[in-house]
Length: 176
Image (cartoon, rainbow, N blue to C red; front, side, top):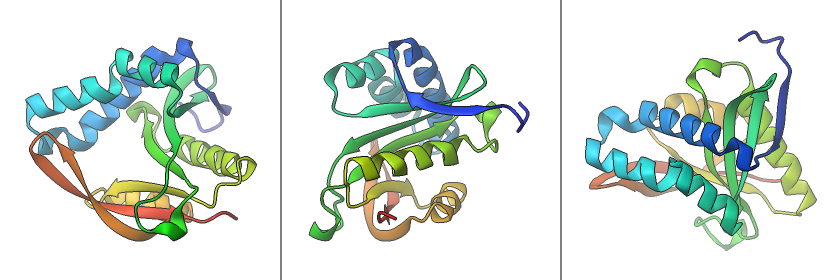
């Protein structure tokens, strides 16, 4: 993929279910696969990234997918929901950036930044007092990316996959 390709971000539709499932599954496996028991990883992937799970989120309206495309090809996803940040009452009325994954073939093209910028713009339209997320403490690449987008550490949390527990930082980005 060339950096000169046009990147667009839109709300995902049912036509994007397979792409979301594939991007999420591959990216999550790449990030956690070697540190997670195979059965626990398979269960997590089924619970969160199977086509059934993606459709369920779309159908129940509890969260919203955004999809980034390079030209006509899906290359990244962002899933967000309205949820208070667990780091204190001053972080209520917020949007949670629940998932952000980029197709490994399209990393370093700016899709992640386009997706985060779209969520920041949306946070203004719904008058959220900020955006929060949790990110694995050992994911240096993700930590650097979120810091470059204006997120700051406000807490810690555990993230469990099966019997494995990972330490996550809770990051917060106030409105502009």
